[in-house]
Image (tube, rainbow, N blue to C red; front, side):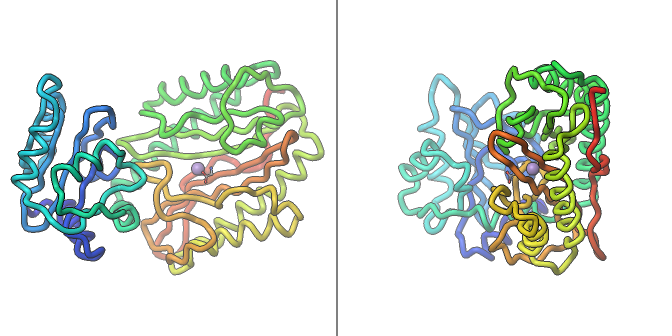
Length: 366
Ligand code: GLY
Ligand code: MN
């Protein structure tokens, strides 16, 4: 078995002291096979065991896509009519697996884990997420090209959207504009539901889009992305509809300085937590630390949230090829929220913001 991405999985198995890895539909399986399978009620499990051809138990309707992946899976298809029990029993017979099976603990469901326990009784299911994070942590030139395309589409769409925003438009209407502008430019699936929040709603970091109309003097926070070849952009800008209130201008200046401090800290050899600390210190010094209620950033790639986490306690040294967000925010409940989010690539001699959308407080709708 010489497929380079399967060999990477075998390295991870050896490094983590696993005997095998099991993947289900999601970014890791997409990275290995090049195919984006849906996680649905039909179980699909791929088993990777060093010195064996990989094994996949696959719903019949997905067999052709998996067979075309270029990886020589031993396929155990099952149809809706017959159910999956027989296919898992046959796969278990072929695998004859015992020992530690690493799984994606944030993704694998009771559905798959109980099937594995039933058919592979000598296997201990262990968390494989931290080891698997290494698989996609360093982006290739092709990955970065896809990220750049996704970011360009999002930034152009954001420009086109804010040019159309008027006071009185609802969050939902503005979201509609943004979605259409991305699709028009070739944007793919949304990596997450767009977050478009007006006025006091902007103080909810992951608030839900609603029918609230935006008024003059209010913030409008827009956090969104698109995908190109599976790779996600993730950008936040906070605007002022009309002239900003003094409170919005004051908070904005602090968050902008924190964003700059975080981006400036990013470089090879710097612990990820130092980027968080640099951004957080600015906000704490302004007396607003308690209102910055999340980590400074997260890795970005086939998933909108992946490694490395830019968070206190993550001593992992940054390395060229890592891509992550720098997105400090300040959220004053019931009043105003500001977040400024960039997507940063670690280069051999520093860091480059792949997002270039202007960061000053832009007045829109006037
Ligand atoms: N948007 C901030 C986070 O999820 O970490
Ligand atoms: Mn983000």
